[in-house]
Length: 244
Ligand code: GLP
Image (tube, rainbow, N blue to C red):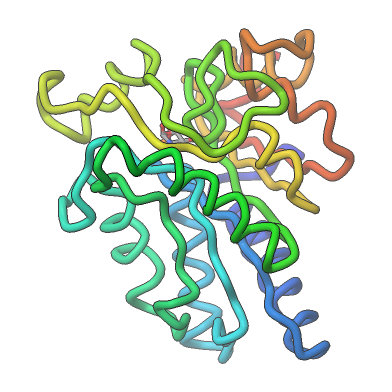
């Protein structure tokens, strides 16, 4: 889907998420959202906050699982995805704190693998992700599934691609401060979501978006694995289509 601009696209995606929350509410069930960070989803979260404040959309029946977190990373750090999610979404809605799940970048290294397995189990226990929000990295990553990630990969500790590290310098200020690892849901975890929406904004993402959509399905471009999913909607603004 090519949309007029980011705001229009973000409103459509937020509307899809809100409809799922309301449908589950009517059924007396929890809605399970898979959430992303980065600049791409910010306007989606702004719209969800607006729907909460102005239209009474409640998040009391919502459970969230974030895709990823840098490692090592303290949750209090302003660069952490925990901080990002609270700043852009959780501080402004009525979600219950116990229903928020974000990979823990402050774990001791020997505890990471058990945490990752438990993260997978928790997603399964609540019935799986109803809708997963994604952005895409210029390396072709979704979450932090960098080139080389396999289709069945699950939540795990990964090394970041050099493109990802250089793109993160703008957030951290200095290359030396960018963590070289992260905990991320796997490609397999993402593909298990019932529905997926991906936001692709701007000229800088156009080439990788073209590979994701039209290129071969390959671990060289982990986002290309989305071609295997039966319910993915990609929203692009006009600049993101320049390479197509
Ligand atoms: C980070 C996140 C990804 C995100 C990517 C793109 O690496 N882990 O989930 O898709 O950034 O970021 P942006 O949306 O700022 O371009």
